Length: 361
Image (cartoon, rainbow, N blue to C red; front, top):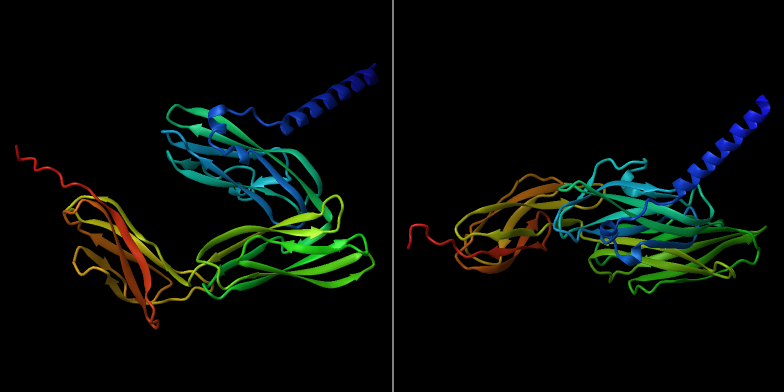
């Protein structure tokens, strides 16, 4: 009698556990207004075939198309094979992400290629939104799929040049290790970016193990700015011949300065804004700003700066607008101690119409 009851209880418990597991694998039903904040082509991610240890992620752009502020209050997943970077290694979002009206935020959904392998299908990442003014909650789910190969290992898992000086170029190497066929081949590394070049070097082959070095070069002609692209490794595999690899670089000088965006200003009413000048490379090096110069010769813009040598400076620019309504823009120059070429930046904004004299009729 007791055994029969125990069997029935065990069966019921198994059904409950299977049902609960199935429920966790299913996304929360989407809310139309929340789903509208994500581009349709980003609602499904296909990571494709990737290597073990590869750095694989997808950036999802979230746009607030409404008049009200929106907040991302939670980022969850249906399994441990994918995770949100914004959770910082945990399961919860440390703080809500505010998205003002008309602005965008980017969240990153990453595939764990170290602890997982094989086919990953029907995995879900869910974004929970809150519209605080009316306390409305909405959900948008991202479908993620991919195949993590266990026979190919990349080290490092992506090509990241980091910060690169303009006109200097850079080189990165990725080691590819294959376990399987003795005659396995890495045929080519394709990239459509004209500022990147690739070279494949076979290092060793034998006992079912094949090792290649992939050399990726960033050309000296790469323009200033952020480069994000992808190259594709082509192998002789019949089923999964291609392996995509992320490539990133930030081409920037060692000292950069933010532009001075004054926004809307009123004639005769001074406005102060900070301008940041910082050293971008590691290790950080202190520098001294010797001189501030303008294109124009008037005294409408004044600057306060430190005479000390340090890796980060905050200048204070004060603009007293003339009675000349309309947009304005001016190029400015900073001379760094020990350098002949100045650093340029711009001041811009819009001068509004002068307010009417309240005493006039």
